[in-house]
Length: 235
Ligand code: BG6
Ligand code: MG
Image 1 (cartoon, rainbow, N blue to C red):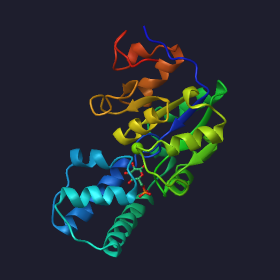
Image 2 (cartoon, rainbow, N blue to C red; image 1 turned 90 degrees about the vertical axis):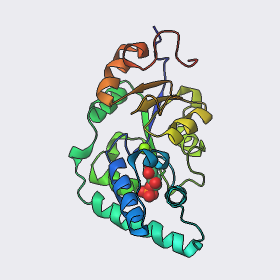
Image 3 (spheres, rainbow, N blue to C red; image 1 turned 180 degrees about the vertical axis):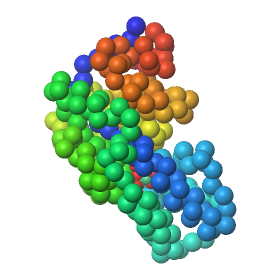
């Protein structure tokens, strides 16, 4: 059975991993698509997960066949979406932290594992404050401090540097294909939280942290992970 190799730092994506904000991003993008006169499906939205605000807008416009906009028009559309998104964030409370997250974080920290957020979002500080979970992280790297969006590894490497950990000693937790790819490019191990087929490049996948905690407690990733003995990525 595959076992989790020791790691000293845990790096978490925020939207869709710590808090269920991925659905609010989707609602706001779908509203924008509606105003522009086209539909936007949940499966098309998967490609936007983990991707920066402007890159997401480009993908959305492409999916609706919208071309020829000026940079100023694009800025205006992105900020319109962001205002709607922030209205939805107003309703956030600590109860929106996803199931199993708080107890998983407490468990890791009790074992001396350092923790960080690595998010593409410029709204990360606001979200962390609203759900009152900032104190559970030793470092936060977000869209305000990175130049290159996932799948570039920058956000993960910066988090590892702040935690004083080598990439090979970091475990990343991600719900987006772009994030899984970025973590792999950073030379880190990565757990996919969500659809095992979409996140097939991750070292293991689970549907929620409630499933993940026992895996890490027991140190056995074959037990609840997607992969059976011998079929995982090289550890
Ligand atoms: C990522 C989300 O965390 O942040 C993306 O998965 C989002 O959907 C990106 O586009 C940027 O977020 P924000 O809040 O700065 O628009
Ligand atoms: Mg995410």
